[in-house]
Image 1 (cartoon, helix red, strand yellow):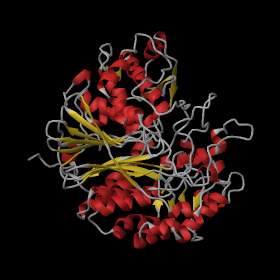
Image 2 (spheres, helix red, strand yellow):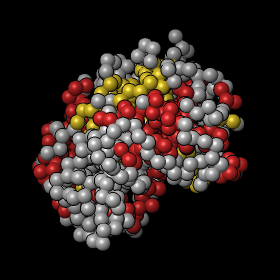
Image 3 (cartoon, helix red, strand yellow):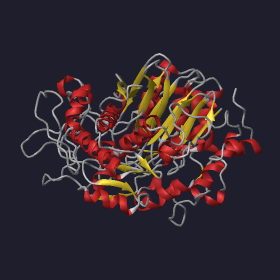
Length: 621
């Protein structure tokens, strides 16, 4: 048995990553760790342990481990949400139970990223099978393919399209969580809402990250009376860090859903208020109706499980998510490139490896733009989405990678298509949150949840209560292509259509040992189209390259969406940028604000990682 780490001297020795000197930490990190230590009150279940496949000082980096929990663990984007999930696990709840509780608290404390006004993909492992629960938003029945076209036929600017009712799709997360709970819940549905209701009534402190997001969006939030009255003080400025904020409107809505189920959201006063705000927006009204809300159904889809590096089976979400397909295409092509070279040198990704990775990503994103959409509307190439991951096809794509960057890749030919399709131009994607959970019975969840852009459509619903606060409504319809077809009339797979679910980049991922089927990892990330890259980075540098999860998450981010090579601003030396430019890359530095949450099985328990770029934490016992 591992020596237990107790709070105080032993914990200081066993968990330096948690109890690091505050003098070297950012204000955000100090706040996150101090709050966590006050909330959790439990010691780490084990000391330093090497994760599965960890190579110690591989690639010149020290073997570093985060907290290890022997029985159960929750990784979420806010300490209060993680703690709510852990509370459900301690009461005998399942990983799905914990996910419901986490989501309801995130609606309150991280409203700019996800919530009951949005949608989610949940990947579940019950010890026997993987299930994919689709709670993606749906286009209203009255929309047309020209939803985001101006009278002259040109696409609307994103900023014009997103703010208001036009961009709001039918929210799906509440119905999806109810469906997943019906199969895998162990605690009463109403119990899962109690932590969020209590926090909404008693209040929570405005965090540094939330305050920063409010500052960036205060001008738009100020234009809507409901959001302005809740988020801004009498002086018109966002509430400061530490300000106690209560949300009685959300408490009332959550109490109704806990008591009456998802019907309390999709029917009655909550549904009527959502529709009124969407249709009643003065400058940009939308098409959502009561019939759209009443008719929403979550879907259970067949997950896609892909072999990787012989030893692993990586399971992810099928379309309408493009996440797993693009993620595994990128890693599959990368695996077939002999010129990739060593991934890390002096703790940073090398220029040669970055060249190989971003070229592989360009190929994957070219296929993503051409082929992926809602499978109820868009046929897969060769009638099987796995055609995009066929080893022979990946080998043909890998052969296109040379010493100089292709800059912009073209889609391949993975299989016959019933009709010609036009590639979709890359559009902005933002927002989102991720949750990774393992319960005491070894059941697991990877759930990525979103309202799309930061603050969604900027519309706030009080559920018809007339009380302060409420929840934000999504702008998920802007994930559709603004342009429905190309100049030749070929349709874009991800064009707007009534009842359709927009393509997503969300990549909730579960990884298994291919030899014995044991669960090894649950992970995912927010960050729009960057989700694919953040998840790929974490997966590659843990199970693929031998790092513990936290050092892998901490590595600088990088990406290409089949355009410029993006490197996290200020994290790479000038020599790396110069080498890539010499190899033909257009290199841009960008924020690349990820928020990865991951849990990795080790011989002593679950080792967690939370992205320091946001406020996420890992808790457990």
